[in-house]
Image (tube, rainbow over all chains, first blue to last red; front, side):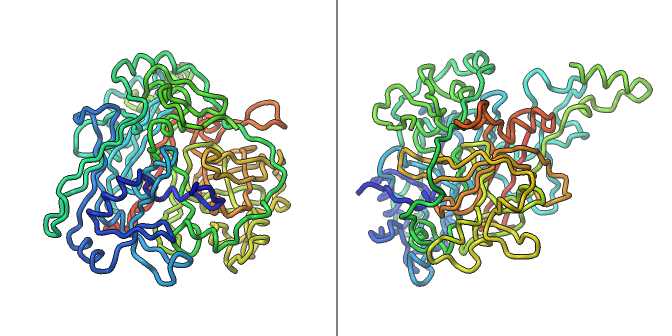
Length: 315
Length: 222
């Protein structure tokens, strides 16, 4: 059944291919509920998960070279969510995982952004992903300014000048920052939960259709920096509310909780295949992060050459 | 270039250990609303002010566009089975002493209407909504807290619950409307053009309710 309903697309969840979802289900003891399209977890398993606190590592990189990956580690807490009315009468523990019907739906939604710090530098055409840090409340925030190349302050020799604060949200302890396109390959590793006799390491690679060619990205960024941003085009509409707007509670079926905690449409984090990734960025970023044969259409959507059935045509 | 020369002229009498980047704008640290919203208490939002006088909303950041999307009053008023605190649930703060159902177009003097348009959220999967677009003053954070305010920014008032709470667009992409000749700049680009931020970038993380300190969302706009 085509997933075409007018209710909010819950990008607070992680949308993955069904077989990948099933592997999660096996590892975490989840049960797929046909009615709500949610993966629920019973109380026993939930308790055990809280105790064991398994973690999921999402490995993001432009190529399959693991040394060039950024690993985002998510503790079980990031997945410990509840759904109530109108999904279930009483609050039910579930796992924020959804079956993507096709690759345009594959998404690393808000659940992942809880542990991810993203930096979008449109001046350089770079997109960076880091493990988010959780500083204590009395730690003073320090922000390292991002300047347009060529406009950096000349006299300040160190980037850690006290006048402007020092680094914050630094890269994860896992070394240097990687400028990556998170859309190329996602490797999802389920931490071993030996005690429950679950599968050990599950390595699931989501290979991007486009089969990115590594290399030669930086030079392209230079030449593309002057490219103007594509724009967000709107088409005229005839009415504010469509006649078959579902009632409030019907719509809630796709969002946990009483009211639509309408997920931030943080598309930058919705790494659902390279096509999606590159759709979300202006041209400068695309060319920084992807192979040279990407082109954009009028709405700024980027099509990757070898991906024939994206269906993301300009409307 | 010009800024630096001006600085050296002015600093003629002063110690040159003052960092030269006094003349460059600083990144803006976008404070969050400090509210854990939602029945499951997991989402952490930001506040934006729209219009004159200001109507305030809690919104979530979006990367796909550079517009300010807010719920419009008509939405809660016409929604079937809308809860009594519909506006509040959609992130609308009280306006002029009364609970708000959403953005009231007639309540702002600085609104320049563009028209009714498709939002173009995710048409490829049949997920979209229409909104009333216009230009109005948009400010970040609660009033008088140092958050930047820019006039004539693209604002979209959405009634449909498909976009239940508002969004603040972080993309530098301008917006095109057939009724208007030129593309309308985004908030991020406008901040840069007005030299309020040093580049066109941002950093963002969603915040984690489950973390020990219940870390809120954070964003820095450069």
